[in-house]
Image (cartoon, rainbow, N blue to C red):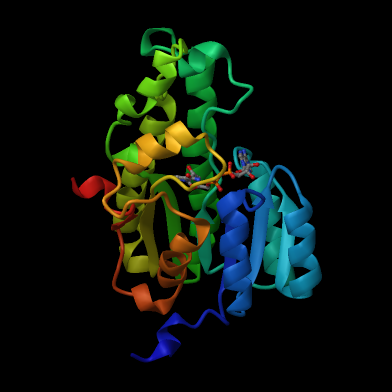
Length: 269
Ligand SMILES: NC(=O)c1ccc[n+]([C@@H]2O[C@H](COP(=O)([O-])OP(=O)(O)OC[C@H]3O[C@@H](n4cnc5c(N)ncnc54)[C@H](O)[C@@H]3O)[C@@H](O)[C@H]2O)c1
């Protein structure tokens, strides 16, 4: 196969939620492949400083809240001035239920707080919508672009609450909450809508659906979760790099509106 179809040296790639576990891993690989990467996040951390040192002018971090259209528009201006039009957008930023979440958030559905619903929709749906509006618009006017919307197996299927049975046996009234799941389902149809809307404008829009990454969770959780995965293990961040390179590059030129599911086989059974 001609490896040039994976060439990223002309791409200007915007990654939201870059300071997180997966964002950093994508940035590192895309930079190694000679792309320009602009990372957006609420916070800058040590990993970001390391990327700055290694990749210098090819990498730019901008503090930005993706739920603010005003901030995204000023980010857009900075990118165009420093580099040129963005050609790839990875909508990676999202929230799940943080440790600081109110106790009801991980409890029974009947008591799931309205504020938790609003917050998760604000980031996971409105944030993606605004990034598509701001960066997709400029891509469409430039007649080229690839948007990668990150979803989850919990956006395709309901969370399997039996995975969390071990917590309930320990006396915790724990249920994987509804908000994340519904927001990630919304992302999948936002992809379909925009792929069709921009099909003639040279902007491709695809979803990349992921399963859980092993990241110091408790052993009981890992065992219960892994029992659902035909491949027999949780993912690691490297498992998602190949799909990101593929969707960012010309190798996926004829692909739009699709959902690339990389889940160790979870949704196949
Ligand atoms: N890690 C997994 O197991 C897993 C599984 C399936 C899907 N995913 C999806 O992959 C993506 C990345 O996951 P991760 O594990 O790296 O998450 P993470 O929590 O480590 O990183 C998310 C990043 O998004 C940032 N962020 C949150 N709100 C923001 C806002 N308003 N504006 C800008 N940045 C904001 C956070 O600061 C954080 O750095 C998410 O979309 C997640 O839903 C992850």
